[in-house]
Length: 127
Image (tube, rainbow, N blue to C red; front, side, top):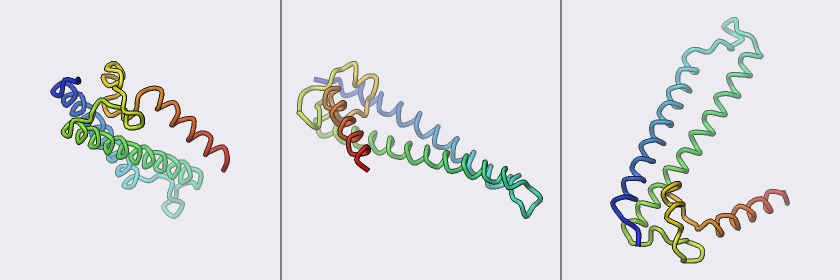
């Protein structure tokens, strides 16, 4: 069985890392909002405005991804509390401890994670 305290600490460290990244990106996006050199009405060039819009969109996309990862951390913490942490949500087998150490919020064993990614790729290719 998994060592609850070790995994709880790993999850807390990952949560802290993700929150720090999110805070830095959020500050960067706010800075761009305040210092926009691309505003054509303020004498900026339209190409600069396009670049700033692209960068802001990219940063917001990253923030959304960080939010999803934080939700995974919360889910893993709940699984730790209810005793299901460390078991694959798809097949119920134990997740490799090395995988849990590397990706503490993982929900699947490596085999089922591969199946999930293949299924996602297949759905994406049909669009």
